[in-house]
Image (cartoon, rainbow, N blue to C red):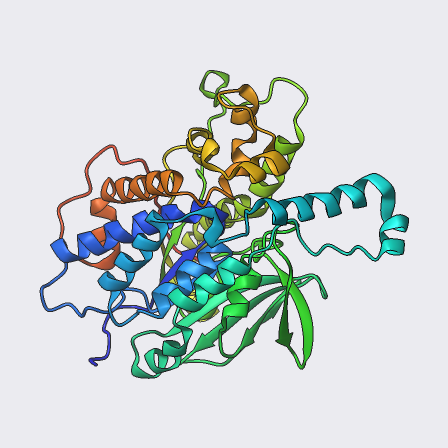
Length: 423
């Protein structure tokens, strides 16, 4: 394999449960644009050297990494999985499983911790994600990863998880280039082989799915969703050597502030439990990338004020960033498909009535569990359309011959900028 001449390129995939279907549409469009615009002698392998992911994004990241020698085929298979998704492939939805889960939690909440201890009832989660573990075994061949790293098809794969045991946010990575780890305030890294347990841990939505035991620093700790306490989602790719990064978000980066533009599910009365849960989920999954991008832009502006010679002496290096995020509100899309949720899930979590205002208000929460074809297909189509609308910027990012970026492009959805090394 010829040594790449391009700067190390990173891919950052954020979390969001079923919302991660949007990422697949973006990747489909990138594969299509490469076939059209890239030189004919371009390698078939992945255009990304460093792939990092969190939560459901970690699963997509691992699937891409395991097919880094054939990007088009890997994206096609990933899209096929997401287009044919059903909730029972992720969590048990049979009535008995839901009844047991609901009964245990209602007993805990209604009779108190004392009775729960007396009865030794210790539910670990609301849902059983055993089907997801089985799906990962079939569709994410992690046994291929070491050979792909050795051959140079991939430089690094990283997935993140949050330790319930220590309270720290951990980036687990496997790299062919460096084994140097990093430690920052309440976040650190761990080098080693990535297994399916890491993917289950990274995607273990709090309360919804059970924590996962992982070995770290010579002991066992229990981990949950990597989106929790993830303050700097771009940092792992930078630590691992990326000089340019494509980040795919799962929520709009700029929501309307004008009252006339407020979405139809804006709260006008006391929030329901489902709406509060949706707000909490959005805080966990969607806020950190936008904050990190804003921080990146501020740092870049500061760096632009430093004379080039002084900046060179400082050790700071430029990072090019292309950000793609949904042009529509995903919770509004979810509201159109929420009836596709299995009946027991609707009754247990959302309590929805068809075509009701409650349905709109609870849609944000429902969107994280909507692993159903009608919803995932619409998100894939949106991701593809958003990316093709930015054809010029995508081609410029990858260095593919292309026309000028059309005027009027919405700069809020993609930025090319520079940053320092991660703090």
